[in-house]
Length: 377
Image (cartoon, rainbow, N blue to C red; front, top):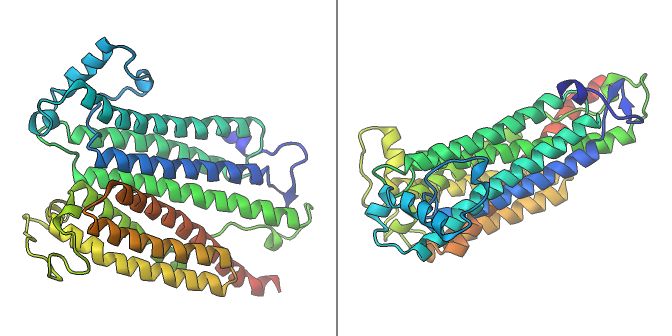
């Protein structure tokens, strides 16, 4: 596949002697994959809020594709669940019908993961066989495939962390699982933006082997102006995952004060900074609540930078998503973690990250063009 990825289909444009492949279809495909990841984040949020994540106690990547097909198979799955600590400590006496409800969300969550894997791997193989992947992108696309597989493995490790002596998964493992999904989402969006730029500017430049290399379409490179705001937002989303894992959203349903105090009562030292950050719901809620203001400021600053560069649609999308996300966060607190608002809050956070990554890509490309302008002149 790597060798094929370095070739181009017959008639594919070339700039500066570099084969451009078919970047427009590749960009559309990756944006579809990004949309599926956003859907996966939504299903994952519902799975967590309905306490469904531990209902399937085994990891069967292939044979687990089909759900129980008869009452005997359902009873077998239920019997396995009844050996878990969640059943013994929280759901003792649960009926089979109630079990089917929580089983559905965990099964659907895993099914969507399998669908995403197929939606990525099958088109990737087709594009490779068609020699439509531009030179230099084959390895990156294979790395993204491997990262998706690793995400599934981390998901299973997360589930395992909650099957013994707990009623839920370890918050740190939940944060790792969501964090990897967000990294994968960002990498897919960045690569799609690379292909989109290659499609636009490759078609605009003369397809000539004598075109100077300085005029060839160039990939965006991360710059501090784009990277720092994205990192700030990423930290906020990880704090959100810890908040979810610790059920920290329930410790206060008032805003802006937490139970009539800026710094809430109840924060305790758990022996180390790491243990405190991953174990104390009051501290994590406090940090998530106020780091959100830093993240919102970073996003609005980036939106201003994009507006100044003429990227108006990206600027408006980033501004709108930021304001909606802040309001959803406040709404989640005031409603005592309403399922619908909390899930929308989680998905909007992932969408905001995707928009921010696209914005960072645009900033990186513009900054690189500015650096190259003297050389071209």
